[in-house]
Image 1 (cartoon, helix red, strand yellow):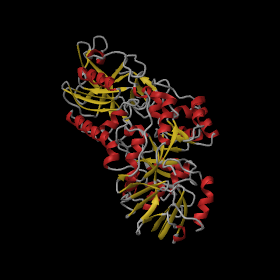
Image 2 (cartoon, helix red, strand yellow):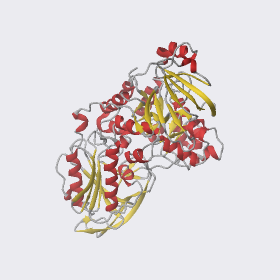
Image 3 (spheres, one colour):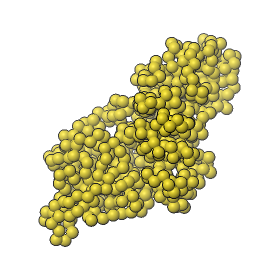
Image 4 (tube, helix red, strand yellow):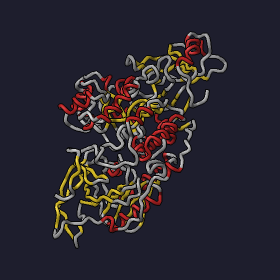
Length: 597
């Protein structure tokens, strides 16, 4: 069997039955392990697993009758045999890696299934970019299901993307083999107000029998939340407190709860299960998102699982939250998420259920990783020039492009400032009194300058504003073409000349990240594919990212996961205030606002 093709259950059924009945030999038998059953929440000692055509044929105390001369035998030696882990909501691009290199990074951690929303590339390359991600995902030896992005732009009228996604695009994508549903419906005001375009996308998804992903980034659990749920989204990952998780589950949604590189939302919500005692079936764990350094140094869904256990979850319940609960939500309970007959043979062998050392990973009946080492190839897609030439500045930028002019005659101004909150996605809408020099407003103290540089249509346009929370000092600039969700270029700096040098460097690189101090580049992370991803291995990208983090610290930054915060400064669907190519956005009102009070 080709590593990356898998027989459907009907195609494999005759052989699965024969192996289960002991009439035919299995391809693989795992002998004498502890069967972790996520359907009944039991651990059953002394069991064998027989596998044929990449699927599980049988699980029983003794399957020696299914062992033939050609059958591979793996001795579990009393270890736990548990289902491969599922990430319910994530964006591969946020790891700065292509699907192939992301798969290569997470397989050794026991992740065998991912539900991915490539809305980052959709904003840059539209439906064509989604198809590229879908096609590389289909080549991998593990399961990568693609959700069709729903919101490009995420907030129509408040930002300009490289491409826009239409209901017709959604309907077309629903015919592709690896599309599992609609990506997170971030335009929650659109749904609440019954916007015809948003409802058409939801209808096209439901007509295809697929799952609609949610994103309700508001603390208001009253009428707007009820209206959003009525609009069709089936899950939501934007909760931050116990009340959020409870409200979603009570309304029949799945509460997707994330532990990523920057968001720590499990501890505050899992008490709905551990303390309130609610039914855990509608509680699902996800990452949303992990950057390459986290993947290389800490893990992926195994990290989320361990954290849930540390937060008081029963290990078997935590396991359900990243296996069977996830599979059931996406209509795949008969296909994956458990070690039971007919399912894809995605299995982890581990010697401890609480700390979950991932010792042996099997996907589709083949060994794919052992003791942290990848044992298979993760094939690459041939990314075309259109995907590699996406940074279009239109001109060479100079310090003058980053000047903020003061109102006529002003000696000082009261400016609106984007306030970064450590370890959280929301920002605070702050104000600061700033000095004026020769008609120019100057950043000072804790307040730095932020600029959004248009990079899709070569307009040469720069939108300037102010940000605080990073702690930058001296003459510096930090820039990135990863700028959720429209992915223009964000430059944060204390010096206009450094900001211009940084922007031009990103244009020359074809996208990525660059950090400058005192006239020199301290670090860079080239991301040539859509200005979002590298097709280099995760360890290589993580090394460059580590150097980038060190460079930010050298510029005075003390914030945990500051890069993640930087990349979200233009995310105009999460309160309270953001920047876009159209200006400052008040996300509590979903409208543009003035820089000066």
